[in-house]
Length: 446
Image (cartoon, rainbow, N blue to C red; front, side, top):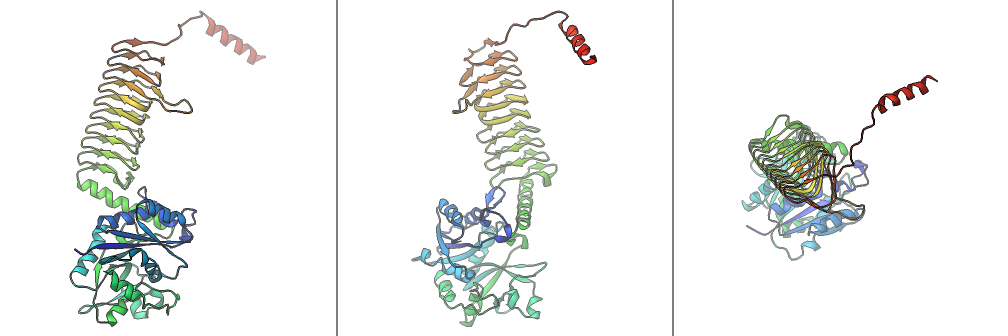
């Protein structure tokens, strides 16, 4: 296999997004579109990746460099061909195949792009990714001869009436030998309706030299581009549909899959159950037999086999829920390792610390982990029983098998198998309630 490189075009201004955030930094499945494009290039084994950015969006360049890839600036923007030429210096010394992709096409997979390298390896001098458009509209048309392959690409504004009837459309993604690609781009002119240097013109130039160009077709949804908030929402919907289908094919049960929202890196093992209206943020892993009940939100969390989460539970980053543990309704867990078989079934906040195996956390329990400046840890031992409405003021430890009385504020460590109580003595004033009601009624009557 020849060495591979990728040029990712990300210099568009994205004015139709009407957002202060640069277009390609908008997320799909909790990950920026730019990151999706870089991920695909890395999955292809590209040893060099260059992101072409505009001078108007330094944030895009910073985001690319944070991923460890090179950047090139296109200034001023003079078309896609001009943008690829901006990457020439960053690819100096590279010898091999290069693919041109786009940072605003977040559903494009490494598998689809890889088909272009396969065509190139089979002898095509240029390989172009196309799709059959239900509504070709303003897409560039692929003019293909069955015996000769791709003859040229015609932009919609420059197409004849006959060419506009063609439904084979250009995605903009193409692959070629790096040396050949930059040689052809050097011959591209801007003699067209938009006065720009089109990347697509390299096909006609190559054919004029007797070189071959072939097309690999991808599903239209895969090459969906994003230029507006509505198109971003469509990309999100398409991504979610694809990933839900993959998980269900692997044995994950979803009663209402259209109500479940996944992140780009969500991992759910076959045999797990996801009830309706569950949202996954980034960094979640769910093992087999786990059940995520309705209206729960998980992010940065691990749920081990057989655990029961929710309904209406919230797992925040660092939550690690052990096998067969229960985290119930309106329980929030953050940076706590919950042992196997432990239970926190109602209305509690567990933040920073550990809960031992088989421990029981009563309703209304709070890990008081923050003093306004620093965080501290709470550790509840194996088999401990925390009474309802207990406040555990960190740093504090409750020993194995210990109990805390309901309504206690625990500020000191509790020994194993002990009972800790912290309550004011209960007092009773006979007849007080009746006298109080009489007094209030008299005042109201006056």
